[in-house]
Amino acid sequence: MSAEESLTLDKRLALVSFTKDTEPFIVVETDKCNRCESKPCLYICPAEVYTWKEKLNYNTEGCMETGACLIVCQKIGAGAISWKYPSGGKGVTFKLG
Image (cartoon, rainbow, N blue to C red; front, side, top):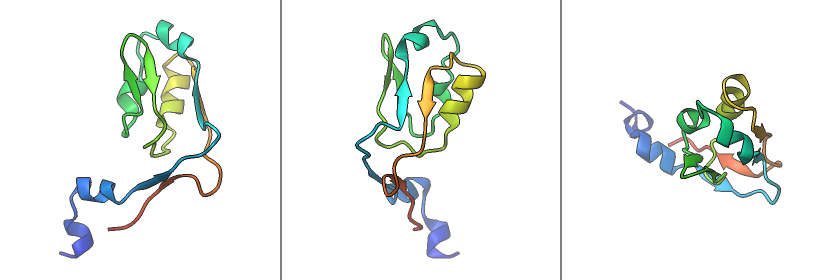
């Protein structure tokens, strides 16, 4: 088994780095979230960007840019999420381990 294959998921995720963009690449109309019954973004995001504590909270640092939140919000949620890729050179950087 190669060294790359022996890395655990936690060790692989530790190799991921993030560079914050000055412009937000995820914008959420949180008032719509209050009316959303299913809140699918809370369950689909692998980076746990979205949390619920009396209202929807989100922190884009750590976003892995899958776009899954946008898709489920538009398809079965309240349509509250606007999402685009960060500016060039910003956002997530994946490294092989």
